[in-house]
Amino acid sequence: MRVLLVGAGGVGTAITRVAARRPFFERMVVADYDPARAEAAVAALGERADRFHAERVDAGDRAQVAALLREHDCDVLLNATDPRFVMPLFRAALDARATYVDMAMSLSRPHPERPHEECGVKLGDEQFALAADWERAGALALVGMGVEPGLSDVFARYAADELFDRIDEIGVRDGADLTVDGYEFAPSFNIWTTIEECLNPPVVHEAGRGWFTTEPFSEPEVFDFPEGIGPVECVNVEHEEVLLIPRWVDTGRVTFKYGLGREFIDTLKTLHLLGLDSTEPVTVPGPDGPVAVSPRDVVAACLPDPATLGERMHGRTCAGTWVRGVRDGAPREVYLYHVVDNQWSMAEYGSQAVVWQTAVNPVVALELLATGTWSGTGVLGPEAFPARPFLDLLTEYGSPWGLREQ
Image (cartoon, helix red, strand yellow):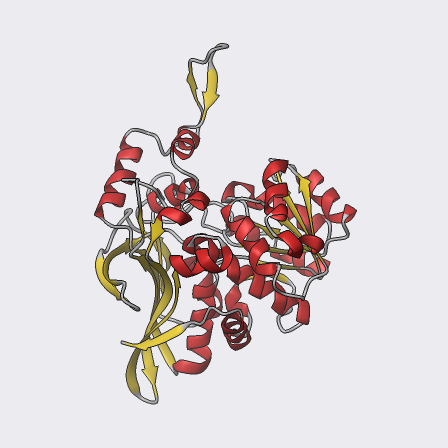
């Protein structure tokens, strides 16, 4: 397997550190708009860097990406950029007949008249619209294969296959007890993506009704997270799992709730109130004349890079899937989860917990694709594949998962 990894930020760099310990691939080309970032990611691997090569690429240039895939004879494109670049990378992989893997899906657009009741363009709609093209090409696009979405979807498939006779509800629940020394507000993940998913109308799926939306931060609940994290207030947030799980798993209801915390929610609401969440450029004075700049990009530039926070960060992050249904005629509830301690991920990989937890899962998926354990054509989510091989291999990587009866 020869892989083109596009994006050498926090998650992309963590991917190289995880992959460098595994023998399943022949070559990994690490490409970024900033060649210094790609070179730094490769150089940091030290004596493990022999299978890696740094390149520059503009992720928004479909033809350039396709040409780079062909130049290096790569059969897989792994997208580690933010969601703005999903579609050009997705199309470039199809042009080159390469397998495509991402961790976030094409962007949504709210319903123009009823944004908090009806869906407009849903997450992933643009990708699923091209599913027939991928099938005709005999190629695979594995979408939403990070941790959330990704591992959370694998948990849903595992629950359906091995734990329940009937599933009534699936709720992805994400929480943490992470703190960052020296910062009053320092998101542990890309703020551009965080704003997008938290301020867009959340999507819920119900059998018989389909997909619909609610107001941001709706349906608050306190969820008790395992391994000492404890109770965290969670709220509805737009996320890919709600758009993926019902396509392959039969269930009555699907939600995604994020443990943001009151201070984080209030900060996001203030950004929205001031228009600082907007991606539309505004004109501001500059030393050489007016400059057009996106307010959201300004916010991102003012905050610390999440990948640099590991030394200041303490605590654990938990991603998991809560499932309610029936087994052998009796009610059952379980929470399938994956916890990463920041102290461990920093000591073992030099990557902070949130980005490492996101990065390990696409590498596991690549290994399953390389061995033929997972295979398919078209546009498929993680739920379309057997779950047990993934969970076993994740444990082999030294990062076990857990199951708690509720």
